[in-house]
Image 1 (cartoon, rainbow, N blue to C red):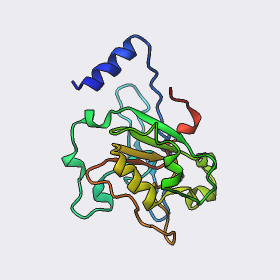
Image 2 (cartoon, rainbow, N blue to C red; image 1 turned 45 degrees about the vertical axis):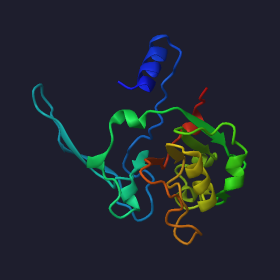
Image 3 (cartoon, rainbow, N blue to C red; image 1 turned 120 degrees about the vertical axis):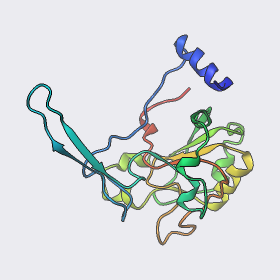
Image 4 (spheres, rainbow, N blue to C red; image 1 turned 135 degrees about the vertical axis):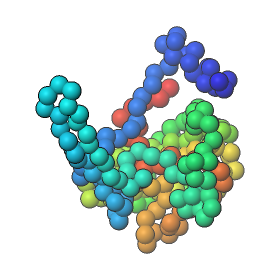
Length: 204
């Protein structure tokens, strides 16, 4: 067990730490990236009597709901799921940056991130809060999110962060937006992106 995991477990036992699940519910008709396969759940068999099995199946694009983008998503021959590091490598300290002043569709730049220079530390997960998740379920949620531009991505790389997240369908822009498809150059880094609804919670 890693030292960090030991520290977190100790805090949980002493009730000095609260776990908040940021995972979006998966349901038929949920928002997905335009052009991606839709999420679909259906029952194949429904047991009506004791001992009868109930079976269901799902089909979905792997970027449905809250998820982590692996490097292979945009990097040829990048890291894939079967070569993932131990799960403990996904456990880290982090910080939420309040970027709620950004307008919809506006780039998050190096200048924006430098305002939090004293809070961003190496090996941290950096979550970008823009408030855009309030548009969940609307048409605008599908195309007009604030996004991390190349200057912001390069800045985070220089700071040595472990991961970056945002409460939108992508950390990058969308087709037709400058910097699309993917501004970050995060070699070996796991990118937790898309529909992270941490705007409803608070971290301390």
